[in-house]
Length: 323
Image (cartoon, rainbow, N blue to C red; front, side, top):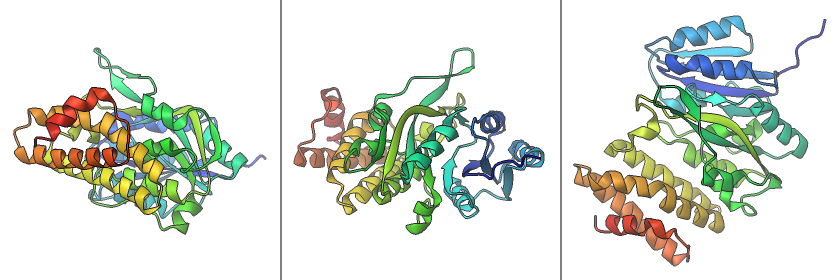
């Protein structure tokens, strides 16, 4: 009798009220070319069929472990619950409304096993609904390409500062030792919680592998309920700005000046223009004031650091400077 290989990677899968998408996420794990994985499914107080989908997965496949919260504790707390249960050398994340590509775990864990690096970073694409409601994967965006192309083995944040632009939790596999050695946790009670944690992973990693392979299809829900689609509300904006400031602060504290400059440039060119467009017609002046202060702060810093910015965003930055 041939016994199954012991798991080498644990994938933490938090989910709340995602029954419409969770089956596809779970199927993407079952379809992995690397079969030696474990998944911790954290049902964060779901009120729909997510609980049943997670429970059925755990009952039918011993690689799935179910954790159930009676009431929602939030995405960060759910991820932290999963981290406490990891017993494998490597850990990764998958949100229960996203899709992992079939070779993702093989590619990411294979890179780390071969190189001895602490973290492997892959590319990702958006998954958007077309006119008929079917979700289709898009192309790799420029900032993702800058972080992951060409492939690099045993690089560092100093040598490859553009990796700081890949700030999502679920495009990576890392050594659990890295998390525990530095006491890394997701900040609870906040949205965009992965930005600060990701920068901490980068600054503490002894070596980083970057790979151009697309490892996740990141769903932008057609019903508008994705976290990233709520930036038009002041509380979500406040968490978003706090996360971006916090990530830059982590780079500053580690004296990663080049990475911090790269992150400031990317935020001004890719994040703030869409926020400024929202603010221009937003009914709440507090929204405009909060965003205006943030844009002025980063623009002044960019000028001080002689960061060259995209001229296409100049008008939007000028508008924000008036708020």
